[in-house]
Amino acid sequence: MKEQVALELQFVNSNLQLLKEQLTELNSSVEIYQGTSSKSSIPMIPLGLKETKEINFREPFKDFILEHYSEEPDKYDEAITEFMELRGAMRTPERDESGVALLFEYFNQLYFIDRRFFPPDRSLGIYFEWYDSLTGTPSCQRTVAFEKACVLFNLGSLYTQLGARHDRTSAAGLDAAVNNFLRAAGMFRYLHDTFTNAPSKDLSPEVLDMLIHLMLAQARECLHEKALLGHSEDLETVVELSQEAAQVAQVYSQVLTTISDASVKDYVPASWISMVHIKMEYYRGRAHYHMAEALLTLPVDEKDQEQLSIRVQDTLQFVHLSPVSNTTLDITVPTTHQERTLLGLAHCRESVLVHEEAMRQQRMCRDLKKKSALSEVLCFGHEAAVHLLDLYEEEEDLLNVLDPPPIAPATKIQLSLTAPDFSQYRVEDVFKLLGPVAVFSAKHQWSAPRPISITRTPTQGFGFSVRGDAPVVIAGVDRGSLAERAGMNEGDLVVCIGTRDVKWLPHDEVVGLIRDAGNTLSLTLVTPCDKNYYKLPKSKSLKDISPHSTTSSSSGVSSSSSNSSHFGSVNSSTLSAKDKDKRNSWNPFKRSTSRDKLKSDSLIDCNVILR
Image 1 (cartoon, rainbow, N blue to C red):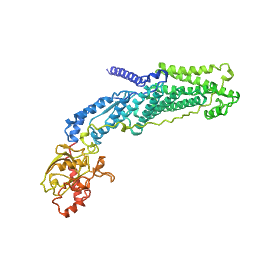
Image 2 (cartoon, rainbow, N blue to C red):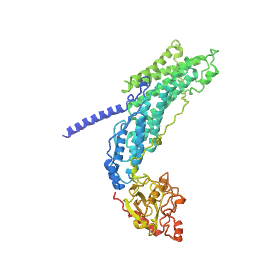
Image 3 (spheres, rainbow, N blue to C red):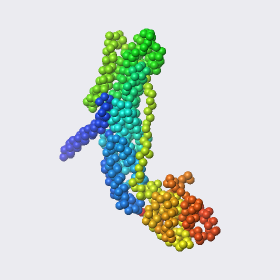
Image 4 (cartoon, rainbow, N blue to C red):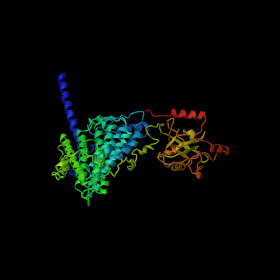
């Protein structure tokens, strides 16, 4: 029986391994997202999106709203549905700018979701499960940070797909491709710098670093292709093309070093490593071909057929690096036509050899040897170099030359990463009804909402003052006042006046509603239970929560303006002049030891909902 079970498990494991390899091959394909111009260009390397399972947030969110916010959860059904539909749409975004906008919208919405529903000291039982973009291996975490990281990775991946799809036969298409590859690199750099302890390999620092280099290399490749469009056939321009191609080869050489690292090599598809190697060799070959073309075929209009002009020598002054070995031709700046021809043939011969190496690398890769578009591009470059070399087949004494000196990589355009601009895609908190997120969040605790009713006579004041806005805070409560007897405490937050929710209202509007209430005022208050809730830095106050904050005097129900500071004063009609002077000098932040202790006890012993 044990042997039979072991045999069946071995069979299942082999099938799983086969499926994993097939999935990796699909996710690593370099043809899926290519544009129509790919038949005449070397394919780019795009990334597939990470996939995730559907999550039902309804019950956990409704339970938390009832338990933590003490609100009726059913009135948030629409908001929960909207968020779940947004996440569902985010799983399969369109491969265009609307898909980018959708992913940014969901990412920005996660800022509010994280603060509303994910307290630092407990879990709601919500698990975010995502699959590796290449291997399909699942990873699961409870933190919103993991969800954010996966969304950002998909944004970078989507940029790579958009970059690969653009028409690379036009300048506009190449500019768009460069833009998308730089945005992808910027997204991966942002992930690399801000997200740590990755549970999946595609989010590890080593893989992200490799992807950054790869996207920059592909952007550089597009710039070189743009330079080839309609370039003039003069010596200086063709020499510049040679150095630009050498620059592309150099950046792909850096990618090859990064992707061949032990921590990355076993993870990425073999076809990616081969493609990077092929591109490095191909652009090395193109650099040598352009240099051979400049030296052998372009006219220089020299009167003296023996000596090259100073202009030509100056053009070639910084093109070559110093010889690196004894087999390297010791000519970096030719001074005669014979040296020019000798150096040109050395470059042409090297171009043929390097193109052949690129073709050999393609044949050795199982996935790439069937790519006809890649074969055509490599064959075209090889045939062009062979054809140029055949023109000098009669000069056999010049064909057996040494290796050419290395071409110095150079470029006129410097590339920089495009960092993600999250502010470009502003969103509105779908759970805005819960109140300002800076106050009404999962990390803060407060008492259950309690209604109070205050009825006064025309000669009485209510006996309290307010400050700040969104939400308005009880700044002070007079001893023995109607407000104190009704159960109002200093520091309480006003959440409702009558039946109207005022958590988002500014100071002036709340004061106006209190004044309009007449002699009977109905309020709903909550008391913050965080010990350090009001211990803010000196440069900040509760009014900093809202960009429209106002301040208030410590007199009765008042606004911040001086002309209304005593309007509706808590008991301005009954207090003596001495009491008024005392109240005017009263500091709401200064309390005696006994009152501090009393307030501290009230905050600790408040009616907190059991969590």
